[in-house]
Length: 430
Image (cartoon, rainbow, N blue to C red; front, top):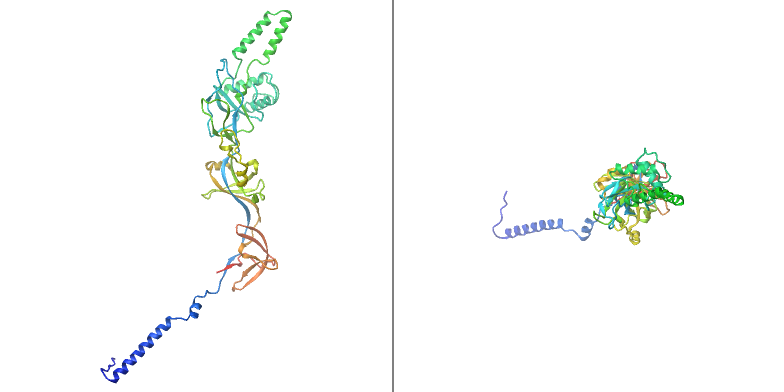
């Protein structure tokens, strides 16, 4: 229904006034619903009451570890140096012996292998701690001879050689057979020695009286060492074999002297360092886990620690120096070495870094555990956790804190069953 609006006169004034009043009231109401006092605004922005953050108590086996970084590598490096000289044969030497066949890098050297050739002669590697410092001939004796006998017994088990004794015909026969089997000839008498033998034999044939006795004595002395000999430079005794020849520093044509390369134990190990405080927790034999960046894990054990397993710059040097820097070593931490349970599985990872986790202790069985943030110490020194029940009520429970590792701590409630697996404990508010 339309209300007629007066065209003029007092009724029109009254109607206009009424409309204005109504409009003002509506506008006032609208403004009032959107405008708040400072007190109302502050109340509207006040944070809601804090709520508790809880987590469930779990049962788990806790293991404490020392973590480090390690690199997969072959065993302790050692320089390989030539000693002595090879047999020169009938021709007189006209200069220093030269390398005629260089060794091959990344080759595993086993007892009896040829390391290289010098002036066409082989240099064999055998196991022994005493260096080959002289040429061995018939009648020679000593530790080096015993090492040779032991090596020949291992290389030629049917030779029937005794473990000790002088160089005799049996040893020389074994040496000749060994050389022949490897494609070489053992060094026999030189032309000069043969000529000397003929001269002595002729003196015996022509001698009479006292001269004959002297000639016979000279011939007897000469023949004691006459025959096959082993030149000092044709056998290289190494304390441990096999070894992996990791670096070669000579080429064919180079002078055959000094360090010719670096060798390492062919068994893969993991080298790393730990902080001195962590090192105090470690001892050889502790189990460890090696974790590759791609997530693959391998079992290992701590094989050693300290200076005895330190890896220095010697592994990268060709001049035989040890490259040790005591200052750098001190800053780097305490060296450690781990032995993988299955080294062959790590062959493809040589030179790569792994995370190393060494187990230094553990609960040995599943225990009640909570995040470290759930445990607090009250004024009386008692450790407690705050438990929230199904109704939302909370109460404090005295506990004994045990092993703490990886953000979790073992708890044992003072009152049995006051905290169980699945109970909710407070770790904070939000």
